[in-house]
Image 1: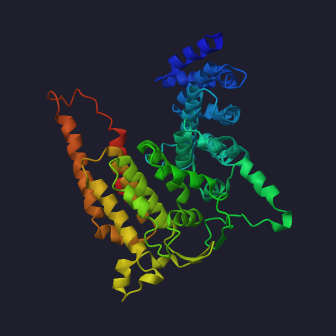
Image 2: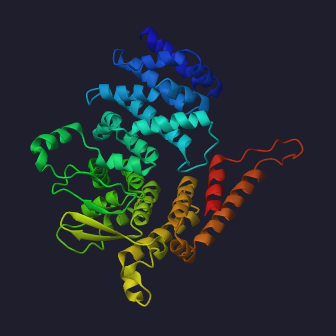
Length: 449
């Protein structure tokens, strides 16, 4: 064991579970030394210990996270991505993925709303640094460093986690959808002369317009394609399916282009009936894993929301989007006019939205579901109903309000049950117990709905 490894291991043992020690390390001069040990010139075991320290600091205090950004920790991690391959030690790759996912998740939460929890107040300086670091992470050169490792089984879950937590804006989603490996880009560049190249530009998903897919689909939506493959691969574990669905949900949010590709990939090529194009995802709602179920309904909700006011017309390899007014809502779509109730009941969009609402309401009411899943279901329901009066009214008809009241009653019983356990408490002598974070999150998201 080298002297660097001994020193790093000692530092790691001191800061684990000790926020004060993390801050002391971050503001001192040792952090620069830790990041230097990530270089390829150091032994793999030394780099692993340094990655463990980066992970611990990124999950610590805001001051420690700020110092990591000031010392360019993310570029250092990208350099590690560029220096490893499938022959590198598995422990090194796993430690890298763990540290990368943690720092991406934490800087993203500092930039905006927290996906599944309560966002603490963030200093202005940390917000600026986190915003800059997150935008740099989705630049082409940075994507070339970490996205190719989606093919590495040791890094797959961490890369999916970085996508699901880090992708927040239309610019991020467009960058992910447009990205292709360098080898594929080189083939596309040399395969045709300049005036023969097809247009491969993906129009921004924020403005519905004509979207032209090239004849060959192999070079488009590389990330989405591999995520879909992992979801429906029979050899994939439930954990792999879950992280893949979460990544797809983040990419498809407010992104008609990605939703169109997902529709085309899951539709049968031998039939013109596209009413069952989401049947594979609907089947996942019957999974025995509650994590797979909530990830599936999250993806379906984002898919439906992205195509709410979009009429999809297919002509060969061309998908044409026609924008409608927001006030029409999903159930007042031109296909679902009043006086045509029979057609409304049979329309796939109508059925899909009702399916999503019923599943979410059922998850919120189910006391046998975990607290994390019920909280996520509340967040998904809240976002699904946001800015759409028709869906909100349908959610009420499906029992949304009653489900939230049942969650309130269950939360009260849980809290009172914990308070009455054990010996009788002396209120004048006992300090007020801090409310668990999970209960606080469930309370917050219920009020947002």
